[in-house]
Image (cartoon, rainbow, N blue to C red; front, side, top):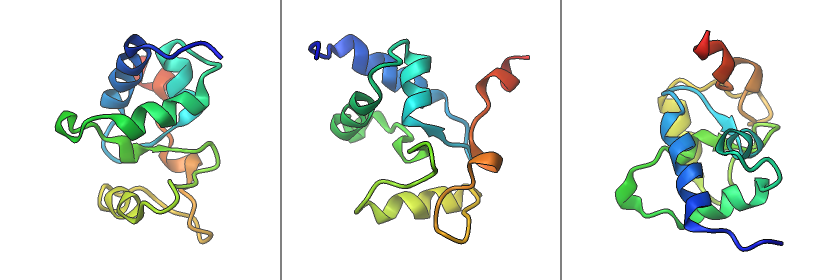
Length: 106
């Protein structure tokens, strides 16, 4: 696996900064938008090490099924506060809350 550079992290952070209030993106979508579609797992690693001083809305990144980060209870609270809808099984309702980037570009 290639070494991940600071450029990769910065590209990931740039995408995450754009996620609108009340919307979420999957790790895969972030990787694709950052220009690294094969580096889905590395998106999670980049978000794990980002400085809190950057105030990135990392809580808006979930897995493709809408599952939250394990052991990060605050994520669900932050998303709920933004109006993100959860299904009865606790997953984010991706049909309602996933950011449709291309729709916003039209």
